Length: 115
Image (cartoon, rainbow, N blue to C red; front, side):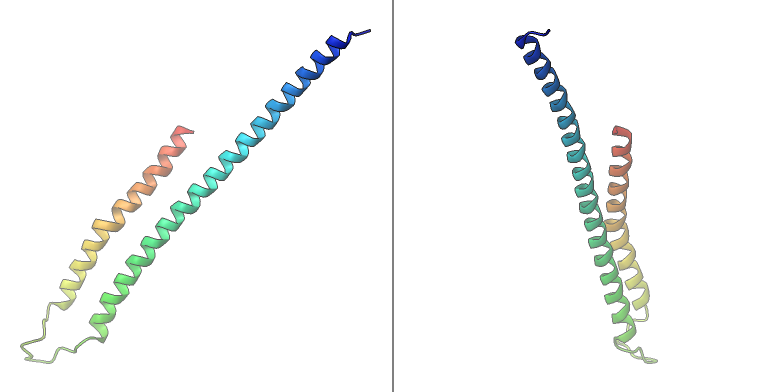
């Protein structure tokens, strides 16, 4: 026959074990939510940059295609319009898009190594 103190001690041990299981389950759920939130934020940033770069590209190309037509011998028309626009787009891509992509890739690869 077990004494009441032994029964209480057994119940306390059981409660502690249950508490550990609950803490582990809660920690796991928190990690899943953080990962999901970080993924959403990363994709939001990526898509914001994709939309911004796409918009700039469409505006520049649209301006070139729908803008003034260059007539033969027109002194006000710049024959290097496409070259200037291409240089501008290349500058945007190299100064904005590539660093962001590099940052996101570094973040994901760094996170995988950390885990």
